[in-house]
Length: 322
Image (tube, rainbow, N blue to C red; front, side, top):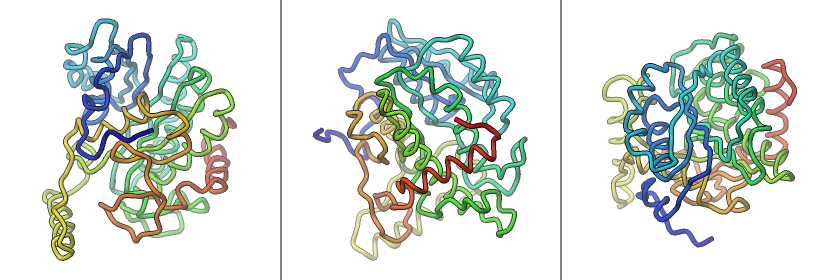
């Protein structure tokens, strides 16, 4: 596929001329930021969107524009889902299964970043438990609802470069906690989950991919101290200036949500299946040093055997086989 889009492309750019009438899409985390914009763009082009949120009242207020801009046939339905609680995950999945309506695309968008050390309701380290295990359990429980030709899109991050998963110590029981290492582990897990889900389901026509939305100022930064994000960007720009390169720019929310939408409903399935995407294209595998701004995906995040091992460990942790 010829790539027509890039880092500055927005959701409206990638969906230009595309009608999604008759499509049904599930998006997790629609109470703020990327989730709201993803839902808005899809509904505005005619899709029926089911959005999940931990706080339904907050999501109801945040998604007023989604309903206001929905095209004919487009809609938004909200359902309660707390990814930090397996009881909530299972209850939501059971309700969707009982409802029985199918999905063309599932976009696993919700997540937390650089959270202080803590645990989910089930005792998992907060970031790994919320970003990976919650979605792992939820998506696998509703996998039968994804139609042949459908897709799973996992939101990862360039933060996967900070750390590979630690299958032996996923909850930092034996190693010192670092919020960015924990975030990196969870984002690598998001990619590996997509790799193995794709392998398991592609024979029935369901593909999975992982995406990096880019650097965006959203509620995801709520655990950062005041000025931290600005300081990070400043440091990056000092390094870029020393190399004679243009300064780094944060993306707008519509630009940040564009890759999720592109990978879910625009790109060819065989192009993105089992891959990691960024800036509306498939990323190249790179061994470059950890960087917040360099493009590319680290090899360990796409390692098929690592993906199988994480799947097995995740099943052990949540107490279910998929």
